[in-house]
Length: 206
Image 1 (tube, rainbow, N blue to C red):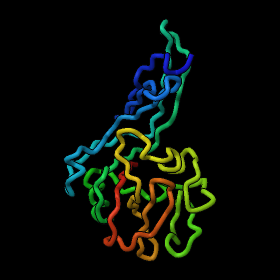
Image 2 (cartoon, one colour):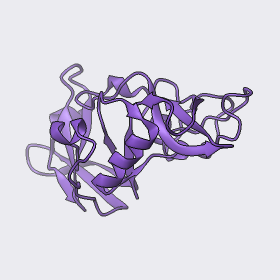
Image 3 (cartoon, helix red, strand yellow):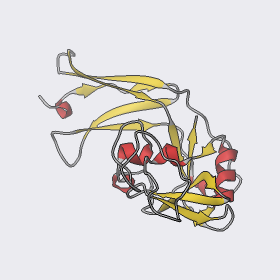
Image 4 (cartoon, rainbow, N blue to C red):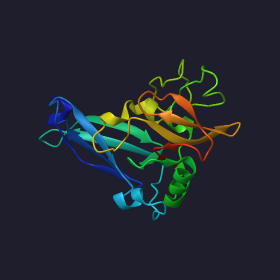
């Protein structure tokens, strides 16, 4: 029996709900969807958004797949340590994106929140510090717990997440030069000063 033939009850903790559903593309696969605080279209478009609720993290989830008799067949568990809020397709200057996150009650993501890439190319990413365990180059190397892009892969493949295939602002800087991180492979680049470049935005907490 595969997971799509089982009944999975949603599980909610700390303002986040985990939901198991059969994949519409592959009847033998099951999707996990995490539902929680998300910026509305109104919040995304304004530079002065209202605050957004903050989940209580970390939380441990255990989803149980049951057969038609209600008997537990398989369990799937994970720990959720961090939550991200995406500003969708709204590009803006680094400084404005940081302010947008702050008004939501979140913070702009750091490099280490997104990727475990390592800068080996001068001069455009010198001083950048990614998550650990580190990659072997300026790209992510898939690891659990080493950044959002590192763990989840190519973000535009996820339905209804509004990720862009481009660079995301981060709060890190070295010698007054800001960095940004690309969502396709987690590479790090410099983006000029805090006020001089327009990118997409991810906010996070804690």
